[in-house]
Structure formats: C-alpha cells, structure tokens
Amino acid sequence: MGTVTSESSTKSSGLFNMPMPFSDSDEVLLMDLFGTTRTITVNGIKDGTVSELRTFIGNIENLQRGEQNSLTFVSSWTNSNKTVLIQDFTHDKEAADENRVSYTLTLTEGSVLWKKQK
Image (cartoon, rainbow, N blue to C red):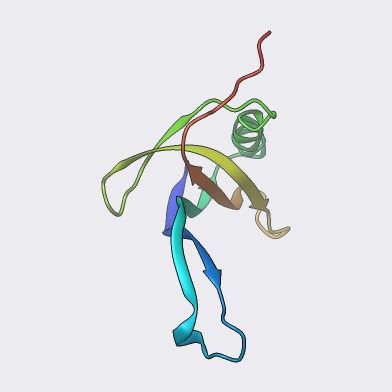
C-alpha cells in the first residue's frame, strides 16, 4: 500500500428529517429510521519503478471489476478491522517524478449482499 499519509472515517446516520412549515431548524422532526453507513478515506504515496507502480494501480483496479468481494481494512488509527468494498480509487502521478504516485481510496463499510453466479 505504500505510505499512508492520512485516514479519515465518517459514520453517518440515515436520518429522516421533516422541516415544519414556517419554523426554524430546532423544530424539525427527526427520525432515525435508516441505519448508519461508514465511509473511510485513505490517502497515501507509493514509490517504485514505473512497472511496479503500474502493477500497484492494476491490482487495486482489478478489485473493482463490478463484482467485488469483501475486503478487510485494518485501521492504523483505531486499530480495528472493518469489512469494506472499494467505492473510489484515484491515483495521481506528477510528471516530475516517474517513481511516485499518490492515491486516494474511498471505502464503504458493509458486506456483499448479492454476488453474480458464474
């Protein structure tokens, strides 16, 4: 994975909110109906030869072929394991440095609900 430069985690409640006409925000009716979701964002830098960097990018992109299996993410911050799928993968290479790529992985916690039968 290279060097992780930052990790953030957002746990969101799926709140249903219903503002009241002619009322301020303190009078909104809130219902906690939809459960929660967690999004984890990992930023990092990977050093290597051009060939190694292409392999690194290819390996991650191969995990996102539309039929993902659950992955285990181990947080370096909370030291906890999360079952995740890859939501987004972004990689950037600066023209000045052929041997370095920076990347961002956006992961969503959960488990695979449906898997296509082969």
